[in-house]
Image (tube, rainbow, N blue to C red):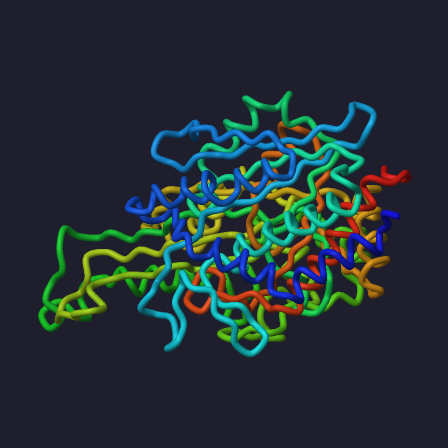
Length: 463
C-alpha cells in the first residue's frame, strides 16, 4: 500500500546506492555556463538532453521557449496537471552556471567533473543550482513511483538559463505566460541554509542595487614628483567619500539607505535564536562588523549592507610615477523590502554634497534584482515547515529572506504567489568561485524533505 514512508524510503535508497550521485555527475558534466558565449550550445543542451526528457518521463509536457531578450539562454516551461480541484504548485530553477574558472580549482578537482571528497561533491553547479533542482526532481520521481504514477496535485516548472546573467528575459516571459503559470504557491530551492546543518525556509531575498562612484579630474596622469603635493589625488578624494558612507566597523552612515523603522518586530521574532553563517572556507563572521545592536542573523536577513565590489585608480598591475587622472569604485547595496531603493541615489547625493564631495559623481545607479518577501507567518510557509519537521524530526528555521539574490519578485509581481524557498546548500559552498561543492549530508536531508513535501501536497490539509 502506498505510503509517505514508502516514498521516503524509495528516495533515500536511490540516494544511498549512488543513483543520485550518478545523475548529478551527468548534469555537472554539461558545461552550461551562460557567462561564456562559446557555451551557448551547452546551455541549450542542458535543457534538451538532460531536463526535458527527464520531465517527459515523469508525465510532464515540457516546452523550450526562446528568451524574450535576444542573446540570452532559453527558458523551459513544463507542467503536469491532475485536476482543477487540486493544489497547483509552481517550482523554479536555473540550469546555467557561472564560469568554470578551471585553472583556479585545487589539484585533483575540475569544474565539469563531479568529485567526492571529505563528504562533499565538488563540481560547478553542484550547489548552484543543478544539485538543488536535481534533488527536488529526484524526490518527485520517488513520489510518483510510490503513488503509482500519480501526484495528487498539479505541478508547473520554470527552468531558466540566464540566472547568472541577472535572469534576463525572465520577467518578460512570466508576464507573457502569467495565465499558464497561475499557481497557489512557489516552492523551489536555491541559495544557502542559515547554517549548514539547519534545515531552512526563506520567504524572499534581499535586492541588489548597484552604482559607480567616480572622481575624474584631468585628461591624463601627471608626474608624481612635479605635481605630488600640489594637485588633487582623485583616489584620495574617492577614498574619503567611501569612508564617509560607512565607518571603520561597517556601520552604514548614509542612514536614508536603511529601513526607516529598524528591523520590524515580526522579522525580529522569526529570527530570535537564529544563527547565521558557518562552514565558510574563505570568510568568517566578524562580530564587530556591521550595524551595532543587531545579531548576525538580523544583519543579513533583516538589514541592508553596503559593499565595494571593485576599486580602481591608476594601473595596479603596472604602477607608474603619476598622480592618476581619475578613480572609480563599483558599489552594491543589498536591501530588504523595508527600504525603498528609489531613494538611494538621491540620499547618496545629499550625503556627498553635505560632506563637501561635490566632485564625486554617481553613475550607472539602479536596481539589478528587486527585493521580495512573503510574510514568514503565511499559511503556506508554516505548512511547508511542518511537513519538513515531520520528515526530518528537527527544527526548521524560517528566515524572512535569503541573504543572496533570486528573482522571487517576478513571481510575486505577476502571479501573486507566496514564496517558499527551501535551500539545500550553505554559505561556504564556494558557488561563484573555484571548488564549488554540495555537502552530501545536506543533499540527502534535502531529498528526504522534498519527498515528504511532495507527498504531503497530494494529501488533504494544504492551505
